Image 1: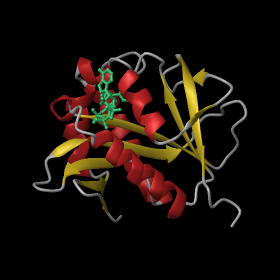
Image 2: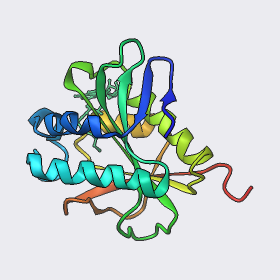
Image 3: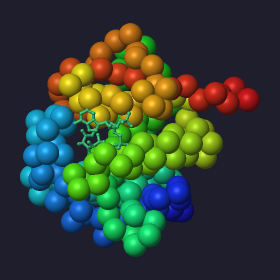
Amino acid sequence: MEPLTTPRLVLDPWRERHAADLVRMSSDEKVMRHIGQGVWSPEYAAQRHAAALEHWARHGFGWRAILDRADRTFLGLAALSWLRDPIPGIGIPAVEIGWWTEPHAWGRGIATEAAEALVDDAFHRVRAELVVARCTPDNIASQRIIGKLAMTRHPYDAQSLYGDLVQVYTLANPSAGD
Ligand SMILES: CC(C)(COP(=O)(O)OP(=O)(O)OC[C@H]1O[C@@H](n2cnc3c(N)ncnc32)[C@H](O)[C@@H]1OP(=O)(O)O)[C@@H](O)C(=O)NCCC(=O)NCCS
């Protein structure tokens, strides 16, 4: 369970101590505006936290807490998980990427910096063949990050984990097959 480092960030493997950060962030309407049905109950946040810990234990990768490299302040969550549910035209092994940052940290390139490091981890350490992102068309900030990662629009939309229909984007591992 090694942290990843970037110029401004430490991406810490998801740990027990991040549970309270998830409960707080997932109860914030600004953060959850584009995520499924909106804010999470503390009980549902606890379930997702437990699932994130289990994913790490089983697969050796997963969600990471985005921490300020200078003082280790919690700035958000960068998620990487095996794709759980089928998307038309996408086979396994594909990993799904996602990002949430604290509203006070928005607009500083934090999510983009974390996402770039996660894609690198997905391709070089996890050796995933494909990275997948799901996003609603009105989530402009997230769409910008998807664009900066050079992900391309998949021909089929799909249901999100929460049942709503969302756009799907993919990025293939340039080293796949080496
Ligand atoms: C999406 C999110 C993670 C972006 O975090 P961030 O740290 O501000 O992201 P970055 O600064 O790296 O980049 C955001 C990009 O979107 C742009 N942007 C940010 N807020 C925007 C807004 N409200 N409208 C339009 N563009 C916006 C930024 O200018 C930047 O693009 P640029 O570099 O081309 O100028 C953050 O807004 C968030 O946590 N949202 C709630 C959770 C969420 O929706 N997650 C994604 C689910 S698919």
